[in-house]
Length: 376
Ligand SMILES: *Cc1c(COP(=O)(O)O)cnc(C)c1O
Image (cartoon, rainbow, N blue to C red; front, side, top):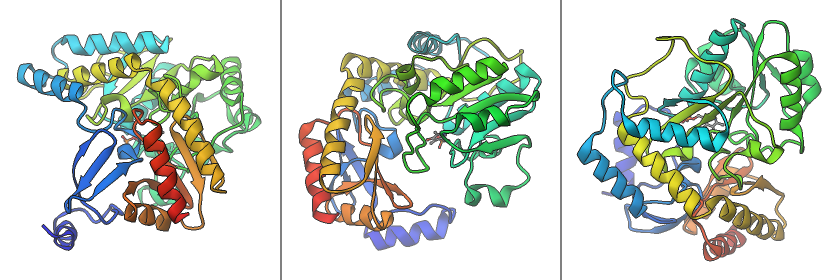
């Protein structure tokens, strides 16, 4: 099928809501993808930091098909073992106490919001300017962007937004009715905003002093992306609530809210599909591969290499591990130019976002820099 036909097909039957890039993808293998014209691309967007093991990873495909042939879904009326195994693994990796599974990032944040509200009986949450926490009505209430929020007002009340990176602003915003402070360790959708060193530690101290929960939204930064299992480990703190998703299923939808020191009461929260044996088996395998192949360390090393290379082209570049952004005069144009060169990235305004699979090697990084040098 010609690309033009695909485009007009979509415009006829699909919600007119996505700003899509002008290509239709049909298959992937490792770090590469192919479109309907069989053109090959170096995938440095990984489905927005999701495909951490690249595409068609043989172990993931095997787990997916074997578990699908055994048991896919039961509902949470029943106990299933993959759910408990994955919960145990996340408890051990995070040092927190309990896990609630979700289907995506927004639902992980939604769960965190309901948890801190229910457990504390308090109503306010402090969130950050430029934050992105999702698009369901609860998670949207914690998201900053006017374009996401405006048509849906009124949202959940009691959210105060303060400057990202400022600890004093959080201290001032917390009141006796504050349930939690929510923050991304690095703001992703906003364009890879890296806060000052010590920011998370300082937020941990303030929230501890004031007796409010600290929710870390590591939906994007978590699971190896920033060069360690979680961004919070770098500042040697523990959040009360941790939101995960994107990379957890390596492309299969699943999220998790991991927490300590509080809990729901029976029936306060739930969902038909949450924590299915299929999703949990796949996620367990993803974590096993990240661990066995030291992919956090690979992210740290290749991230440094890429940042040096991008900086070497005279571009202002920031990030940590394989969560990188660099500034260009027109982000949308650079992304299209890179597509022309067979490289996939995404952008937020004038920041091009580089989020490759965690399995990339030096050759992939070199190829990216070479292609970038041809367009930037
Ligand atoms: C992507 C993202 C979300 C929302 O996740 P969805 O799976 O799109 O619902 C929430 N928080 C952060 C930090 C994200 O990057």
